[in-house]
Length: 207
Image (cartoon, rainbow, N blue to C red; front, side, top):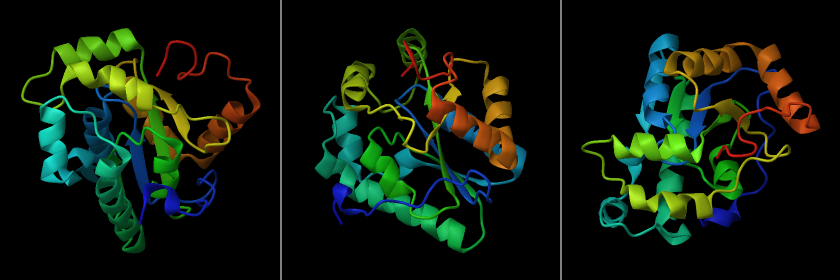
């Protein structure tokens, strides 16, 4: 199925149970590091979306070639299937997946128990982190292509924004609260939707 073929997803779990979480954002935002910390805290399964890429995608990224929608299509399907299976079997999971575009996020959220959280970081912090990486196949020069592809979550997107520049423990605490406390989750969504949260991460210089 193509990237754009999905119908509109169910609304995000503002008050209901969360059975799966997608940690989204550009490379370097901390998806894998934070995802593992949250999974350990909650006793959930952690899956790195990078591990679900077909080998040709890994080869392309290693050699500095940005992925196209056609490249991402089978990868997104694998990710969506994984989330759906975990929810269906009652095994909560956290998936680290860039989910840069709105239609990617819609595709991943097939059911009402899947929550998508976007780690919003400043460009300076992302460059610093990518420059310090070792043994990772992502070429830091591709960051600009990720910015070009990114469609930041909008008030109607249903994606929660979290400050990815903050200390790892603070980010972990914030995400755990959003997962386990329906009231906090609903308040974050409502604040984003009304525009009252003028300092909310993801605005201004955050990505």
